[in-house]
Structures are given as structure tokens and as C-alpha cells.
Image 1 (cartoon, rainbow, N blue to C red):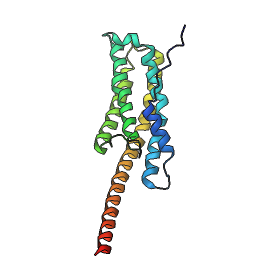
Image 2: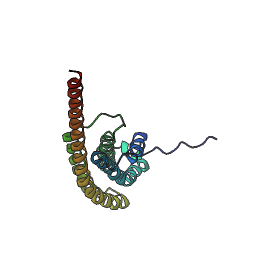
Image 3: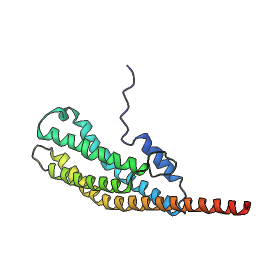
Length: 187
């Protein structure tokens, strides 16, 4: 008999790599400090997401049905958990050196707003009588905690995007000034 399959990672490898890279950023540089704070803030939400993922894994056979509990679980998995993963991936892509495509600030703000709305809908849906009491109680708590988490996420993503744009403008400006100086010295 072989070893059992390992539990799937709820924190994907790309997230672990971004978290490691963020821990190595220079916190004395404003833009890098903000990105490190953003990654640290997203990290605080993973335990709640893992708990929600455990509900889905523990009830995966229920997800195939067409009853209210199946719809609830599919909404939880594809509209709340998957959207959080997208937010985390976009935050990870803000870490210098992680190589992902830079998220659009407005799109990221829209995603964060949608996540907060979906979370509110999840809490309301959990009140249905067909949802087990343990899930209902946990979803209430997680909804409250993640609802409190979202405003800071929104502020940090906006600040990180603003500082990156500012850093890029400064770099382009200093590159232009260096070229002008080089040409002036050659003349």
C-alpha cells in the first residue's frame, strides 16, 4: 500500500514564492514597504479561506446536486474562494521580481468590491435552513472578519499601485535625465 495523496495546498506555490520575495523587500523604500504590507495583509486572510475550502472539500459530493445546499457550496467555491485567489494572485503580481502581469488598479478595486459583495451574499445565504448549523456559525464569523479585512486590502492595493506608478515615472525621468547628461558631455 502506497502513501496517501497529500492534501492540496490552499496557499499555492506562486503565493508562497511571492510571500518569500516580499519578506526580502527593502522596507525603507516606500513602494516596497507598501507591497510588503499588502502581502502581509493578504496572508492574514488565508486561514479563513482555508476554513471555507475545508467546507467545500468535506462536502464535495453535495456540490453535484441541484438543491440549495449544492448551489451554496458552488457559490462558496467559485464566487468567493476563487475570487479571493484572484485577489491574492494580483497582490502577488505587485511584488517586484515575481514576474506576473501587473494588475490594473481599477480592475483590482472592482474585484475587491465584488469580493466584499459576494461575501455579504454568502453570509445571507448561510442563513438558509438547509445549511448545517456549524457551517452557518463559521460563515457568519468568517464573513464578519473578512468584511473587516477588505477595506484595508482596498487601501493597500491602491497605495501599492500608486507607488509603483510613481516609481516608474521617477525611473523614466531619471533615465531621461541621464541620457541628456550623457549627450551633453559628448557634445
